[in-house]
Image 1 (cartoon, rainbow, N blue to C red):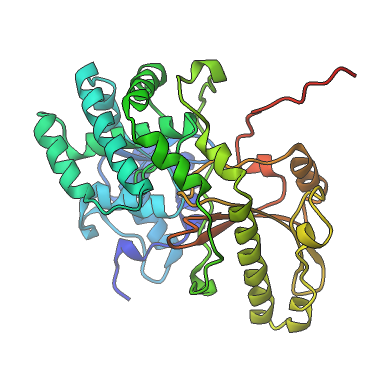
Image 2 (spheres, rainbow, N blue to C red):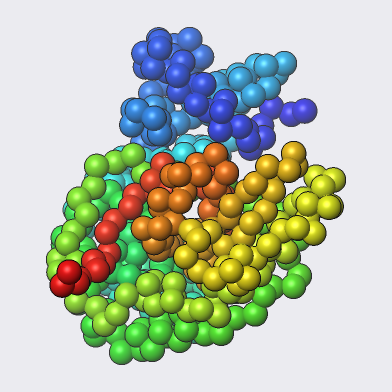
Length: 382
């Protein structure tokens, strides 16, 4: 096997390297493994929030995953820190790009308006299933934003994606939401442009209410992905009346699309039967039950399934046509049931359902994996 950092695939090895980093201290860790200081890219320890030099962590983690090959040295890498950051992000870790973050804080009002208009233009095309080139849009942005690098533009795109989610909109595929930004100013700018963008509302509404059929050509063996990690940052959750003016919460509207929800459950049902057959438990596969259909809603889960040993598995299915970091909605009953049956509860999150369905799984209490924000209250008189 060649010594290539692209072969790093163990999140556990990265966590072990982060443990070593904190045990030795930064200078001793870098000196021991032959790395210089990072000036730009840092990986965040999800357990402590500590920043660590991403290239060094990747190199040491490689050696922990492949002890027979040993850790990579700085000279073994090709592609620079940006490549390392992408590799670590694929394993679920958060990367902090300091220079891009600093530049993002210095954007002028005119620059912000320019990039927001372009972002919303791309989003409208995407929601209407029209083809466009992100590369071409980025080139035009570069010419209209002199002095801005591709990295700073990418970082700002991620900030805008975070605002779009906050405002109840889907975000652009490929631009992962980044929550570290000057929230109030950017939210105001995005809100103002949304109100001026006459076709966005129509495109978003059509996208979330569009009927959908159960996909029939997906390879179940390639369906599952690693769940996003909850951001370990302190963020202020704005009150609804502070989030800017928008016509409607499109993500909540999609969650009410019964046809989409039922299609996601049917898909998960087929996946469960396939999973048990693959495990050699075909008799159990025949007993998997779509209880939200046979017994009705309100149980706190949608599918009654099994583990290989015959023990029960209770599955709640949440489906979206949009990206993996799209928020989903859970009832108080579902939250309580997940906590009460933590050892048997699984939440299956289906995403990109219309285009190329993927899924990740959350086990046990939902609040262990997600930030739970109250969205509505039941008002009564007794």
